[in-house]
Structures are given as structure tokens and as C-alpha cells.
Length: 139
Image 1 (spheres, one colour):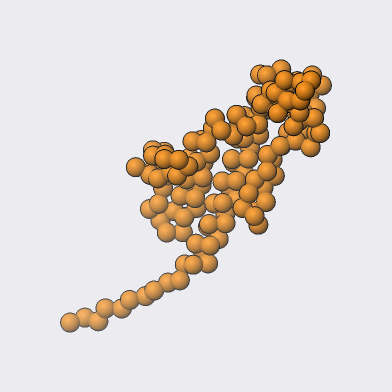
Image 2: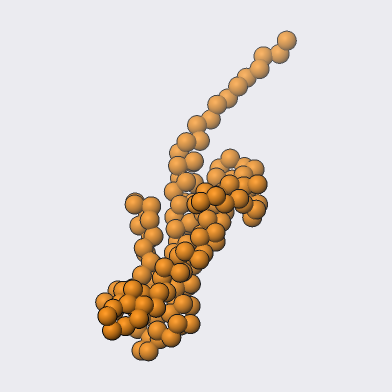
């Protein structure tokens, strides 16, 4: 009987690297998308007087905290979003986030799937998903 030789390979460093790369790409794409949706809302809701709110709207990825910040440095952006005693609320950021949750979930699933697929092979995102609350799973 022939001897069978088994070789075990530690891919944990590659997996961790792929995980961080996937997380960064996910956050970057989600941030860019949320920014674009918010800018569209700003324009559609007529909050485009000087263009300052629109032109300063952006996003920033903090990979250490695994979070993306979306917003504007303008002081009056919050007043447009929530309203004041003198200005009616014209939400542009909250709808950009809430109305596109499935898009953000599919971005995350796609990026993580493609990064891990590069390490382990055979993993891919099919584009079909089931959502329940905020969970995504391939079907």
C-alpha cells in the first residue's frame, strides 16, 4: 500500500489580509455610494443654493474602527437634514442610507466574497441574496 502524504498549509495570514482588504473595499464602495445618493437628494430637494453643501459632501473610511463616515463639514448641513424652528426639515442623508440598505449589503457580500475567493478559490458572490433584517446570505 502506498504511503499517503498530507500537507497542511496555514492560510490564516492570507485570510486576515483578504478580510481587511475586503472590509476596506466594502467601506470605500459603500461610502462612495452613500455620498452619491445623498448628493442626488440634495440636488433633488432643492438644497442647492450656493452649491457648498453639495460640493463639500464626502466620506472617509476609518479601517482601524471598520467604519465609514459620510457627511459634510458645513455647519448648516444638520439644519437642512433635521430642520429648525425657521427651516422645514429636508432630509437628504438619512434617506440615502435607509433607502439603499440592500445595495450596501450586496456591496459588502460581493467584496468579501471576492477577496476570500482569491485566497481559497471557489468562493464568489452570485448576486442573489436573501435579506432578513440586516443579514445577507447567498441563496
